[in-house]
Amino acid sequence: QVQLVESGGGLVQPGGSLRLSCAASGSILRIYTMGWYRQAPGKQRDVVASITSEGNTNYADSVKGRFTISRDNAKNTVYLQMNSLKPEDTAVYYCNADVTRTNLRRSEYWGQGTQVTASS
Image (cartoon, rainbow, N blue to C red; front, side):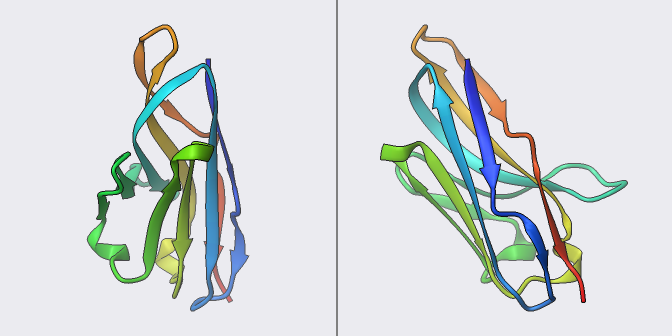
């Protein structure tokens, strides 16, 4: 199996910063694209940012210039640096990974989610 464990969420004042981490572990042969999604109450889950194994990145328009996604392939870990946080960034943030396991089966995996709240 594969597990994704997130950390780094919390409460921050508008304009503040947080850094999320997501570490993948288990029977991993290769990880392709990793990404961060978020879901606010009553809304659908939307992609925030993604990064390929080669380091190519994509961002939602709402976070461009404020958030930065990165990854450490040696540690099977993806990060999301969030700066200039706004109240509308408040949501549960989920890590996502496209993984081929050692049994050669390829699947998509999700973390358990971490709450990010930007509020005064």
